[in-house]
Image 1 (tube, rainbow, N blue to C red):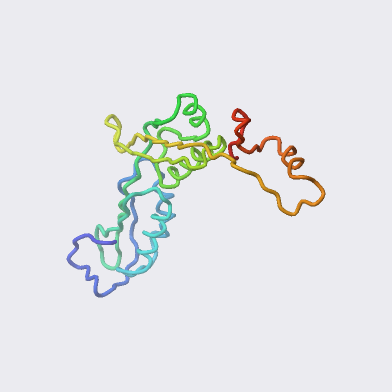
Image 2: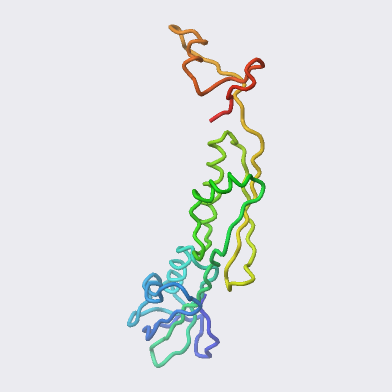
Length: 214
């Protein structure tokens, strides 16, 4: 949205202005000039207020996935020139992450695979990738129904930082009850089963043989 409380802006009647300046507010870690470039707004550009160029600028910044709030306000108008301020709220950054519901050895293995770096922004994409990595880890161990929940809590020592806790429910391993073949006219079922060395059916007399489904 765009808004500033300036008395001479009538949003029911779009007015054409030349941009006299663009500044960024609310961002500490990201390059301001890069963000202005991403917005598509630049000094000397002609825009209508309100207008689609402002809307598209907000949309472009939202698409970066780096912000929890995006606003563009007019700070002043001088003759036919308008001065804009892009107000952004950065998504929180990672302070630490822990695991609940799994063994220490498993947590250490996942920690190496998950590639979360302290100080980086916690975006929806970050969380989605982390959850996917954890689920794939357990799928590889036969836990096809593993569930992962992420809990975010603000860090008390660092401003705009969060701690993540991954709550994991592995549930039971998925076992192979039976293996059936169709269309085999040359080889017997048993011969085909013997060829599947790492894929075993669950049998009462072979309870210690691997029958997990991978």
